Amino acid sequence: MVKHSKKWGQGRPLSEILKQAMFPLGSVLFPGGIMPLRIFEPRYLQLFSELTEEDSTFGTCLIEKGHEVGGQDSRFSYGTLCKITDLKELGQNQLAVQCLGIKRILVRKWLPDNPYPVAQIEELDASENKDFQLKEEIIEELERCYVLLVQMGVIPAESMDIKA
Image (tube, rainbow, N blue to C red; front, side, top):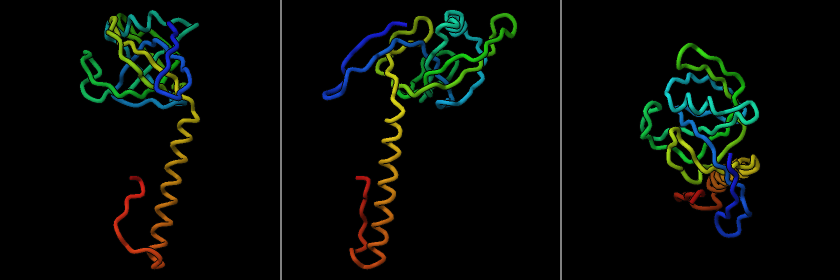
């Protein structure tokens, strides 16, 4: 795995950008989740043959448009870094892989397939997710306060979008 450092945006600290093999899917794998995969496409057979016990990580993200098989899909930018927990051959040119979601990632740039998808990714801190959840909780609390103030007649019952 090739590691790069690059600054993304003003005021943002230097983030470690990793070149990571990717395996786009039609379903989401969250950190802590386990997902079985059946590998049969030649490009992904090559990917999993290149992964080692020392570095058995790859990225996954949800396919926005298109299909899992054959490529030429459109992919979401957020995904999950995964680790292989079990790998078995199912006969010629097929693997059964079990993987564990490790942490959230952000795809900064898709690189040319070689032959499987590769991207420059940034690992996201779990605290970023907590900040988002806290903001959502604050918005919900403000909405409840607004409803109570309207019910008490303190403010007029006008349409107001707190999230705006």
